[in-house]
Image 1 (cartoon, helix red, strand yellow):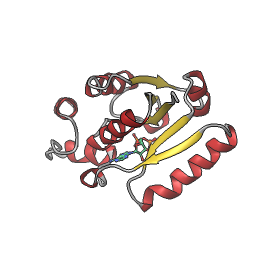
Image 2: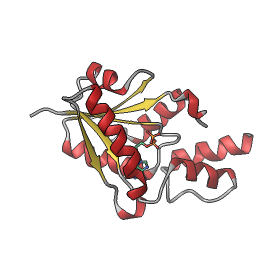
Image 3: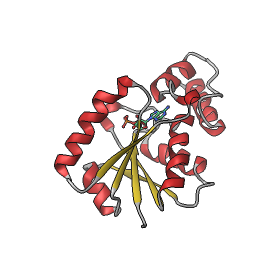
Length: 161
Ligand code: ADP
């Protein structure tokens, strides 16, 4: 059966943890759409165009992965894209409460759309975009947490800022 999965998030910026989830998903589903939330209320470091572009570059090797930006309700975006699965990554117990609530709400909004959780490899479990930004802002080495191109963009961003 052909199943399209949508993987929504802020991806500010994409990390090796996100990539690990994308890699697993690309092997499970016929098509994976990474949906980058504009999320203007979070005031992201990278604007949505930059976040989409970085994701496009780092997922270039996957033939069945595509990247979009979205600014509407996730369940509506999923429908427009023909996705029947919402993918989320689960790192720790601390993610669970929020993710459980989100999945429940999305089920109420769109009963046929299933939320599926994937867990990353152990070495990525503690990576979060917000922590990466904080480390990079303070001049720390983030090379083992993000793809090289993301590291370069972070350095450029904070050197300029
Ligand atoms: P959001 O603002 O929607 O949480 P993120 O970009 O922070 O957006 O995360 C997108 C999804 O990827 C979420 O489901 C999040 O739990 C998951 N995720 C984030 N970091 C990791 C990681 N290191 N390993 C696995 N999943 C992750």
